[in-house]
Image (cartoon, rainbow, N blue to C red; front, side, top):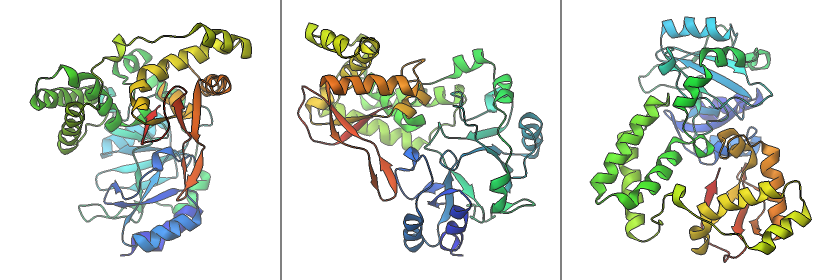
Length: 367
């Protein structure tokens, strides 16, 4: 069946932020930063490139929250917890229950609800790296995803997700114990950051592999889905090779120190006394995380919405990041290398450098 070419544009028309997938693996990049569905032109291009692909979609960019229940018991429990919804999809083992995402920011919750007693996963905007699969895609088992007593038009009539029910189901103290800070909600990025902070203290690749495996266990303990062994091994090898090549600084972030010049503090205070403390705090984070990389020609992006969702700086809102960033730009303490732009139907974040560093090179991301 030419699943993607025959059905992707129809689902796009109903509001799904569709993308081609091989089984459950996305075939394109950049979707984790989507804030809305791709254009018709882009999806039509993918229809020509990947006619027989499955149809994946970004729940967040579609304005949805998907509860992925893996068995009959979990389906019943999910309905009792979050309420009935006409948007239901039959999967190989269970069911996807579709809800409209709330307009207010979602709490930072783990992907998996298994540690809280429900055999189900959540797919939502703060975990942008994960996708859901839409009908009539084919599961590796040979079964097909199917709408249950509905079709794609149901997407216009979904009830809102019950955030209060989720909060009651997962008490705050449990969330605090199980929470892991992840840039862009990415488990792979979290693992990479973790390995980079430990590699200098490993005598061999085997030692770093042990660190990686322990980190993967921590993911599960925190209520997240574990990474495949192949991903863990590949990431550990790359981080170890980069450290041996001198690309990773042997420094724990908790031990890092930075300096401010008196003129920088005075300048920020004169420009905007109200937001100067936040600007200094953000500048400290940027210098700790990116001074060495910028010296090597790397750039970074500041993504206020994603950083606020991931709580990179606990308690900060999107507006707080934006005000601090804008003040640093006005003071000339950071420099915009390239503005926000559209590329292949997706938004590419603006790139920045610390003002004292040279421009150019590949990009790294904060947030």
